[in-house]
Image 1 (cartoon, rainbow, N blue to C red):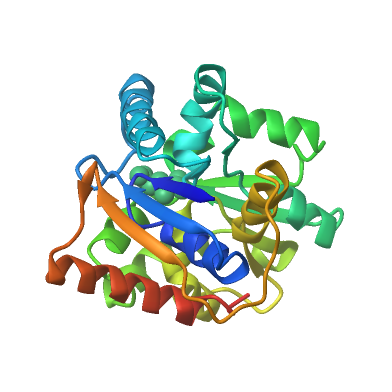
Image 2 (image 1 turned 90 degrees about the vertical axis):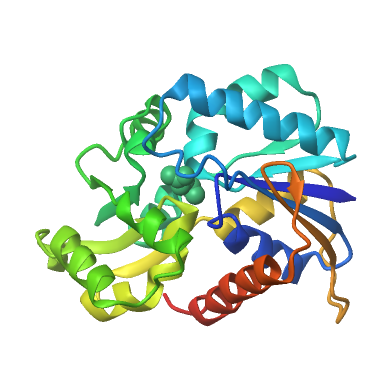
Length: 260
Ligand code: DGL
């Protein structure tokens, strides 16, 4: 099956990369809305419009399922897209349930974009899990900018994360949930800053499992390199410098994958 992966930018590559490892027999289209990233600081109506444009493009390209590899776009637009289009649509959700399943009764720091954190969807998730007293929410918008310009490890990144994370009484937290796919690029810096007891959790495996279930796919062990096409806001990426930039993102994600 041809599967469309969509993100405002380069964060969604982390979910795509995980899917390509588990489902190498499928074909992929990755659509990054590079002309409009970041979404996290924009108005809901604007995001809805961009997501709909991406969906139209992906559906026209013949995809059989769409993974919204962006927590922000999921939070704002997934419900509308499901009402409008009939193919399987898999959204992303901060891995709060995973955190509470792994560490029952322990506090969790959920990080995301400002729009995800102030949205109805996260409130409902926290309510459904009865986790009101266990969750702290933190927006880390600058990480999206750092990621897009491939500034993964720098003094500025480290200073920003120290400033944002170290004000919590981290000894009391079981984990930090990366509720924005762009945050996956900073796992090593976070690991160095956070105390050992705070585990780093992302929603990538959960989303790919949901894709398998919803699109009725099968896991395969194979050396096959899956077929993939990249698009930036509807424009096919063929330029060698842009492809090199993508490669650098994927390499970085490979290095981050095992950090917990
Ligand atoms: N990657 C996105 C997410 O998972 C959003 C980043 C942005 O565009 O602000 O939330």
